[in-house]
Amino acid sequence: MKRILTAAILIPLVLLAVFRAPLWLFLLITVVVALLAVFEYLGIAASYGFEPFRLLTYIYTAALFVVYYYYSLGGASLSAGILLLFMFAPFLLMIATMGREDLRAAMLGAGMSYMALPYIGLPLLLMAIMRDSPRGWVFVLFTFFAVWVGDTAAMYVGKSMGRHKLAPRISPGKTIEGAVASLVFSVGVCCLFAHYVPEIAAALSKTHLLAEAPESLLIDLPAYTRAPLWLAAVLALIINVAAQVGDLLESAFKRGAGVKDSGTLLPGHGGILDRIDALLLALPVAFLLFLVFGQKFVQG
Image 1 (cartoon, one colour):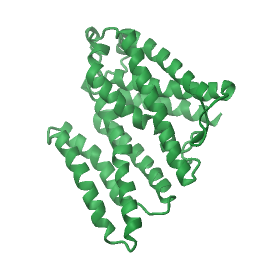
Image 2 (cartoon, rainbow, N blue to C red):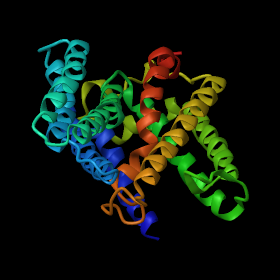
Image 3 (cartoon, rainbow, N blue to C red):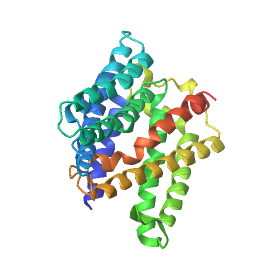
Image 4 (cartoon, rainbow, N blue to C red):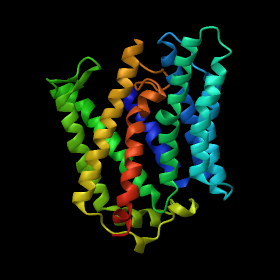
């Protein structure tokens, strides 16, 4: 019941942010989520027996979003800014290790701290970039459906019909039956969504939901056509597989540390990292897929 109530509160807020939040607010919300996830991630990392560099990790995670916002104002090259950030972060972390007595543990802590950037910071930044692109709400919602619907189907089918363990050493609760259900329901719902995008866009334009939304989200009805169902099915399948792998990766990370949940912030869901773990791999995969095939979803 707690899980359902939490989802019932969070999902409308997430959708409202996707449709109505200006870029600065969407980035602010996203960076807060990223920093909370990093906080939980570093707590798990510390359970391995070495202390990460928390402050530097928070600074570099937040810097990713600052770089993008500065770029959106026309102030810098996005690719150059992110490249420099990723290039200098390990050097600063290694410099910081020289201030600790146990250099071996300090180096391990630095490595784990750096991993927070590509593991948490960059995927969530890619979500903001995808959402800020023309007709970006289509791409973001498609990705969310591929992940959320699959996760829900896997949980309920796995509990009621699951007999064969998917990865018992990493996540004993996951079953092959649940994984298959995740794929099937995810593909089905995403195909329906892709097919009815023009009608959804028309309905949204009548409700004025996007009347004050960022320019990249404004509804321009002639721009929307029906995506080929075969393409929607293939992309949903790939994104869902990425999401399931991302879920298992976080489970392995927690299992190695002897931790059950990343936190307790979300009743019924554990921590923030537990809630977004599947998205952390699904978002980069979706970003690449829509970079190549995105036009077919909205303009034929």
